[in-house]
Amino acid sequence: MLQGQKIVPAWPRYDARVVAEVVNQWAVITIVLSGIALVAGVAFIRRGNREAHMRAMVLASTLATIFLVLYLTRLGLGYEKKYAGPEAWRLPYFALLISHIILAAANLPLALLALWNAWKGLRAAGNLGNIDAPAARPFFDRHRMWVRWTVPVWLYVAVTGWIIYLILGRYGEVIKG
Image (tube, rainbow, N blue to C red; front, side, top):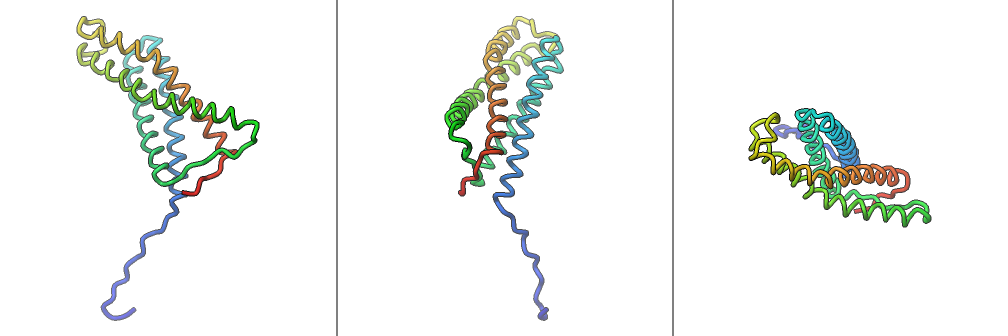
């Protein structure tokens, strides 16, 4: 070492593809957990447990939001896979993928409307035991109306997303970006 020179450690090098694969794994974990929380939330409300339902749905929504951030991060890192499987499966795969994409795009506003009405209803009611209050009832009625569409769409998007992930895990090729 020369007199007066400092040793500066080099920044660790990373491979964007490896980082993207880790981000992708966490995205899958969060959306699986979101789907589980969604099903639990539906089960709780059917049993009349409003507090557990609310907690499960907030968790499902939070995990879905984290998934979306991770998914967009992965795409921003330039990591994407294309289908490279059997030709006989190509058309069914793309039909599944297209329906998944369209309904995933529709699910965001559906979920936001359901959450908005639940939140406004809770604010009007003051607590979960008072949801039949005249000021709260219209919000919870709209909440129920929206979730009749949102829950099936959300479950379809989650399940088809898992299927697409498994298919691309077996028959996918990373696109060089």
